[in-house]
Length: 69
Image (cartoon, rainbow, N blue to C red):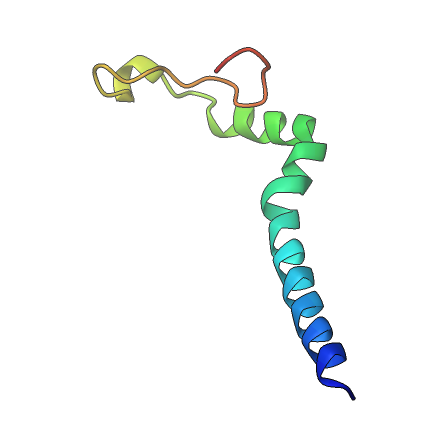
């Protein structure tokens, strides 16, 4: 095996590993927004934001809602 091919395979393997690590962190939630909205709605049920939010910190909001930033 030539040295260039070996370096290419190692670099390609590294890029593949990084892409595989980013998929569940970034791309899956990006494509399944409704599922994450339902989970967050369930998790936040019964929580009064004013009771637990520190003074001077912006209130919780839907991170998937456009124009909320």
